[in-house]
Image (cartoon, rainbow, N blue to C red; front, side, top):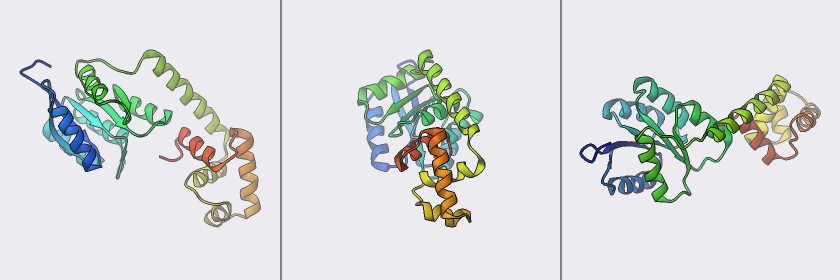
Length: 213
């Protein structure tokens, strides 16, 4: 963008303090300006349609869905809009979802302010921060996850999803209408197929397999 036409940025962030800080940071740049903010998937689609931003700075976790959901909807109505994800989410599943939704960059919120504005500049100019190696690695991991998912029975998927949600074995048995012993059998089978040995590993694995957000 030229100096006379600063990059128009829409911020999608459901924490107002964070949104205000990002707005101040971006508006302090000579070559970009914040045209608006949104705090949900639904609001972001409406604001993107109304405000016609060049770049959307997008959080991944939103109250009514994910930034990937919002991005796909925004790209349908404004395919020319560029997408930069800025999030605390640090999973390959989230990166793949963002990439699949059309994102050109995926940054963790621990990154320096200068890196955020530099990413907006790169993306606004038609560039991307996803390297070919990164894209290839994400695709390979996604294929591996899909292969693992195909090995699971429908019941094992349900058990894994509930484990990832924090449910205890007896609670899982009650919710699925099966015996506690059967739940333990499914958990042993999951451990054998996926290498899951703890609740934390179950959460990580379920997210890799996109069984939970």
